[in-house]
Image 1 (cartoon, rainbow, N blue to C red):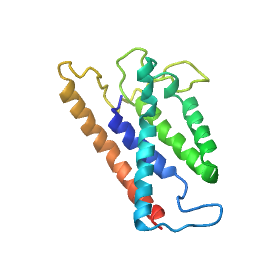
Image 2: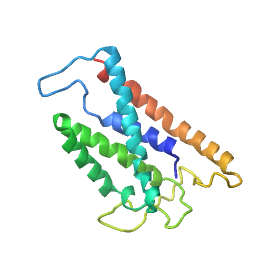
Image 3: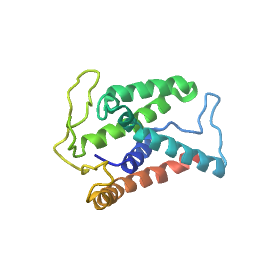
Length: 181
């Protein structure tokens, strides 16, 4: 399964790609200065990157790859986002849900070697675990003292950077004009 780095890149790309126009408001369009637009883009990228990593917080409570790694949890994130941002409710909710759900997609495409194998992607509708047969991302050990950990994590990070960084950069480049209007 991907590292936090890969999850952050995917969350950032998904969230920024679907975020509502930051310059829109119920009162009409607002113009940003270059500096404030750049700061807003950077803060949104950081926020969506953190949302992309958030499902792995379940490691702290010993329930990795279970309920937090599901479309149900992504729906909850969208509902919370909608309740917190009434001015651009739909756009922000969709972007937050997509950033969070990017984690589910990447873990589904990753090799898992720790039982239970896969992720509980369809919770609360199903408690089954799912894993793709197309292992795009290799299994990443969390045992940093084990032999071979560092070369394996380096290889995984390079692969994630090659696959996800271009996507994130393209999304940021295309959306920057909308943030600095």
